[in-house]
Image (cartoon, rainbow, N blue to C red; front, side, top):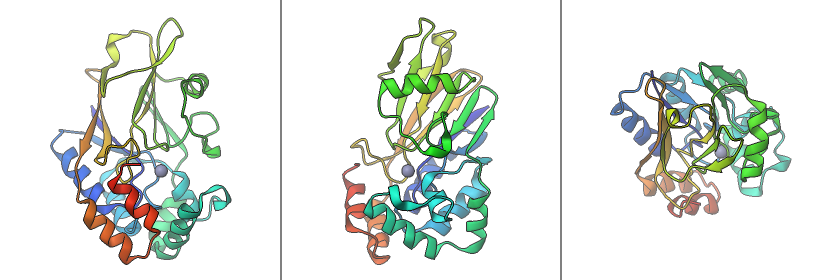
Length: 244
Ligand code: ZN
């Protein structure tokens, strides 16, 4: 089976459209979404609809949770909070009900799936260091755990000798290191923050063991025009053309 993993779409319709178009060329069997469909961007309804239509499994992200009042926004920064308030007002009832029903984690075959961290997924912690990754390896049983949340694509390996390191390339074959475990952040579709402005998502083939990232260009000025029209904070608009 070939899987595509998308995450952190953040109501960016141009980016989601471009990524779904690219996935269409990758001969994928299933698309899985790791959460944060909404928040920051101007098209929460359209994006929720597309994710519902295209994904076989969808997890809850912290912005999704906040938009449907499952999570208080007091820990969000000011821009994120303004965008969440706007999103809550804009989301249609059917989509709100759908987001309310999304799970925090799921396991399928060799994969654990979660938006933030396998340790206490409802606390929305971030994995930003090898130390935090090493800690989280103790909190899933499968060979691979896929996450989103930081918007930074990364592949962290726990090899047989219990050494934890970041894999330096954007592709890996899991069969190359027998007995290893992997913690993979699939990056962000709608708000990449690794200084690369293209959308990011991941492809995994469970037959060959191959995992790799895809980067996809999308119409950033069109997204920015929509966001300005919705009067979303200018900081959120400009960061898209800087990839941060
Ligand atoms: Zn996010």
